[in-house]
Length: 132
Image (spheres, rainbow, N blue to C red):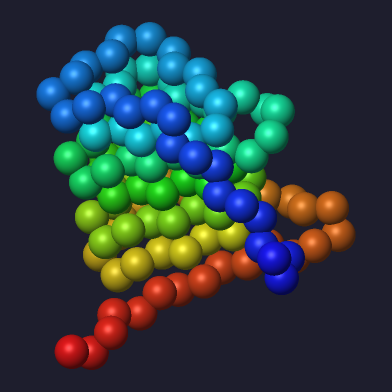
């Protein structure tokens, strides 16, 4: 309604204390609370959502539509819809985004670049802390 896309449902969970070695491919939605050593890549058919929680760690490439990070990523990150960097997000690697929302406290150690859109400018949105 009113032009907003419906967010994909989180269908898979990598639980806290779980460690995965190897490439991880998913569709729809994925939440990572554990650790992944390898690339995390959404399928290209349809929209996707990836949530990397506060205690999560990904060592490898991250590529999805809507990406929310509040944990640690060591490797490049690409979000072709919206990239949300929560206050405890730590990224060591280059970041490419369509639209970026970055909260105070999030850090990036790498190059930050917008994706080239077909005639549309990319958007950078800075979030501010609410006083109170």
